Amino acid sequence: MDMVNGFARNKTRLGGAIDIESLKTGLRQLPPTRKPSKIGVLRDLLEVIDEMLGEGVTYVDVADFLSQKTGLQFKADPLKSMLSKLRKEKQKADEPHDRGSIDAITSTKDTSVDTSPNE
Image (cartoon, rainbow, N blue to C red):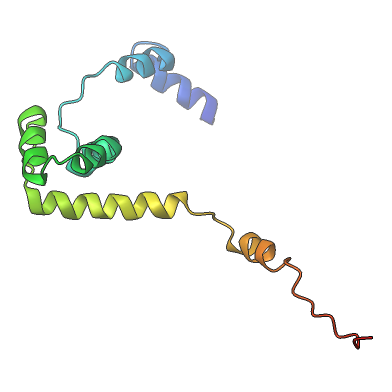
């Protein structure tokens, strides 16, 4: 038995050819059945949370609000830790990836000293 006939036989056993595109479309329409992760929620809201913290909203208030609205259990101290981690992650992502190019720019300054005798 060759491979082509083997695959054809397997397809017919399932009731004919399988419409892959239809399966992809159907899978994309499945509603999520699990809650998002806490860190994922915070990652999406980081800028707004930092803005509100800067305006005087407390970590306790943020944690309570997020707990009510998401159904996830947020507490103030772990929230602080997760936000700190996300800020460091964002800072690292915002840094230039090529430190060599920064060093090259700073080393192009004219640091030569005029060593000719004064006349």
